[in-house]
Image (cartoon, rainbow, N blue to C red; front, side):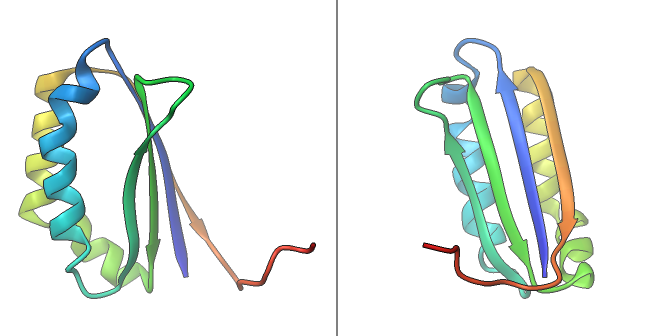
Amino acid sequence: MLIVMGVIEFEDGGVEQARGAIATMEQKTRKEDGCLVYTFSQEISSPNTVRISEQWASMDALALHLKTSHMADFGAEMGRIGLKSMDVKLYEIAGERELPR
């Protein structure tokens, strides 16, 4: 399993400008084969910060996602809005288990 985690820092007002593009990206990506989880979340304590959480079944599925037209459209929209920063990392996971209690 692959996990993608990211942080986008927007300028003031940027999150509101990005809402439509984010909603479209979530809706289209969640329909892709191999997409297990795909969500953007706005931080409550830092409203200009949005976190990306993704789970993919395989590298092939992720690679196809990165070549979709909606990914290109999203990147272009983020470029128009202007970001303070964006940091996205890919993690390969060997297994999954419950948290200890």
